Image 1: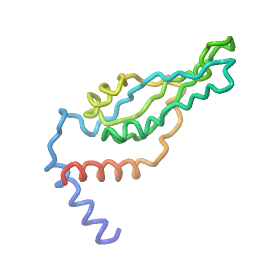
Image 2 (image 1 turned 90 degrees about the vertical axis):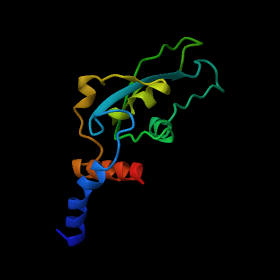
Image 3 (image 1 turned 120 degrees about the horizontal axis):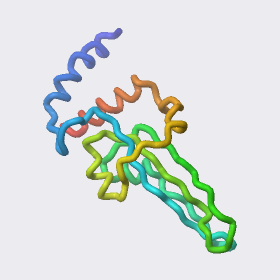
Image 4 (image 1 turned 60 degrees about the vertical axis):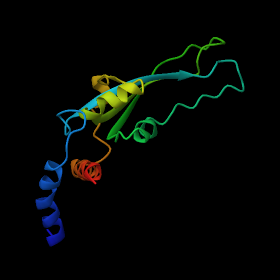
Length: 139
């Protein structure tokens, strides 16, 4: 391990310990939040529904997102039915829950079969993102 990496590893706990938790304990705990999106209309050629990018929606509110799962629902083909329906799940830090709730998200676990896939990044990458996020809150 390089000297810089060793120094960073030794300094990280002190930097994180100096931060205050703005919304309570559990800053390192992950929770799933969810929000249902549907839109568009069957039989309407100009109706196009593009669901919001959940990572962007939460990110603009200062909520880092560590993983996303989308559970697509079936839609009917009758005129007037939506063309899109899905539950969007996002993995966030527990202490950001109240902010996510203000955006209409609720704490909800994705179905077990959707959780069996690995996270998008390795645990080391998630750790580095967490450290960078926590350090930026202190600055």
